[in-house]
Image 1: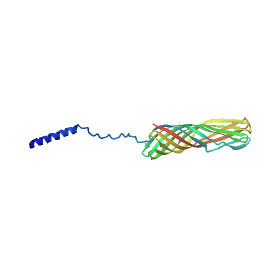
Image 2: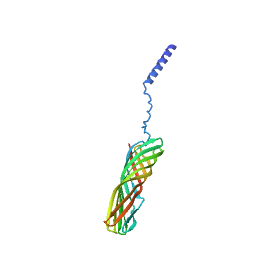
Image 3: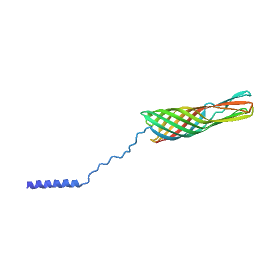
Amino acid sequence: MKKFLLATAALAMMATAASAADLPQRQVAPAPYVPVVPAFTWTGFYLGLNAGYAFSNSDKINFSDTTPFAGSIKASRDGFIGGAQAGYNWQFGSMVVGAETDIQYTDLKKRGFLGADTARVDTSYLGTLRARVGFVPMDRALLYVTGGLAYGDTKLSAYNAGFNASGSKRDTNVGWTLGAGVEYAITNNITTKLEYLYYDLGDTKLTFGNGVDTASYKANNNGSIVRAGLNYKF
């Protein structure tokens, strides 16, 4: 009898274990998917647009003639500037070096008067080719200085009432530029910047006459630019 009870108990335990094995097993929920966002780097090629305000640092056109008469005509230039830029950066730790070129339309023109004498200066476009050197105080902000070559179209026109003659001269002047800025990466591909540049394209000189008398004019082509920009980084 005792052996029978033990055998019955063993069979019951085996049946219970088999039933438990047939029950659905509790599943462990999979870990949520977290996309891996690549770390941001300033290294790479970029293209962008810019717009801002430009103003001349020299507002006088000096002149002299054989009547004899000499003086200066005030003709300061200021106005809108806007265009496009392209460049490439290399990042080494917290240091960034790069090169940038830009070209923009400018609305810099002004006519000045001195009695019946007039003079006008125009700059219709301005471009630069610059190096940039900066450091990264945090991973998405860049503080930099920049400098290099500047070039632009300049035109000087004048009318001399003393001997009733006029003349004009248009040049493509080459000079230099120096400035600084701050750039911030909104996303891994979109950056925005605020920049100041000082430029100097040298002088434009104009001489004309009426066959008897001659007048000479000289205008300085230098100024400052404050502009904002938006870049797409590839």
